[in-house]
Length: 400
Image (cartoon, rainbow, N blue to C red; front, side):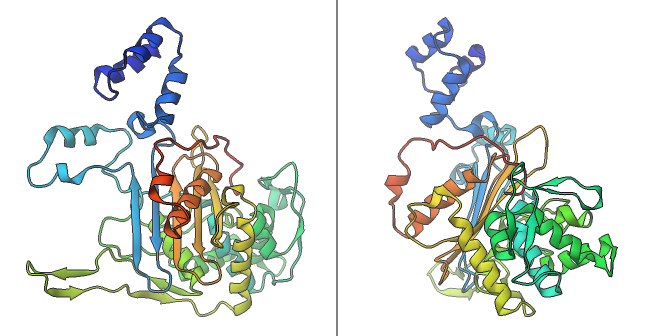
């Protein structure tokens, strides 16, 4: 391990440091401690070592106009070194980088949405009559209908008897699994296709069946077509980009307007004369959700924020939903968050994903910093203090 760390100096990734090199050579500092300290001090990034997690993305919209405010993919690269006179050595280094900096994680990377999808299931259940706003379902910790053993993420504990808005607050797997089960019933007969069709109908209404029409390469979304119980909590074979999740949560914030995304504002000539302007176009309008259903989604997402200590000193009222999506049993779960603020008069909608980012609490740490910067609670200098943020490395059972 120490020899591999020393190679970082030989390759010029780390600046020559005789003291650190000596401690590696004589064994007084372990390779683990060395790398942890270097990452903590931001002398090296996880992306440079292709460690999990080493990639992330964030897309921010104005839900009132559909304007795309930010689309960020990490790790990035210096495009000035690729323009005009090509820096071939730099470009080749990017091509060989295991963290794939040329790949746009905001628009191309697709993963399961995890529990960020539960507002779709709630909408389907309420609108199709499988549940009502007052329906109480008792979480026993394990959903065992149909021979399944789907555990709620708090197992061996449980959430007890809760309504749908409380289920969004608690991210209760059991509640949404039961909702999907009821959506799948033809009389007393369970019909998987019926449940999948209901979930797909509302996912489509929220724009999740289509690309966002952004002008750069974008991954193709996939609404789950198997296992409605798993699909109800954002697992099964759902797969969406961060840009698609941002459009979805924006439509929750504005109660039903699903926008296409555009990176363009205007085109001018060399004298600054405007040749063409661009405004976001409406992709579709959600018309069949009742006022009470929108209220359930909003109240559930507002209450959910109170469950996360990461937002305890955030001065703006935020509504949101976390997600922890399982993809590979040998790697950490994906950490996701979707939300909007201020909750009572939304100005921005946000979706973020840290691939293989362990628990969704890590996504919350990032969103908290974005909100504090956007709403001027903290300055850029206060947030970018030259130190990496300490976060957790525990992966909750998928579904929180």
